[in-house]
Length: 109
Image (cartoon, one colour):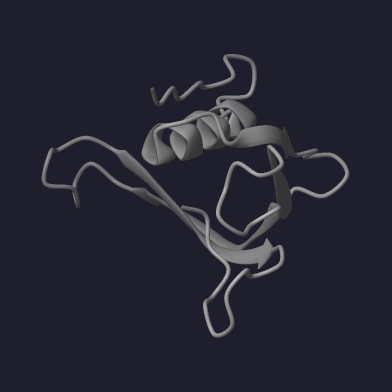
């Protein structure tokens, strides 16, 4: 059951809730033990720890977020006739864990 929360004070996505519910929802079972994300310490890094022995061969995932861009499209240039805010970022995933089969990439399944 995916749940996305927006922090009313900052207007930012609550990534801890969004990521944990998205991963659990896509896998179909409770696999996420903890999502560590501290925007003050390092806003570019998210750590996701999995419940031991719940995933095939991933113990932890690190997400690195960078190359952020944003643009305000004026109402005169948008199809809707309204001012539109557009943002993007690049996210790279590194999976940690021991592969149980030779030649099989680590993955969360």
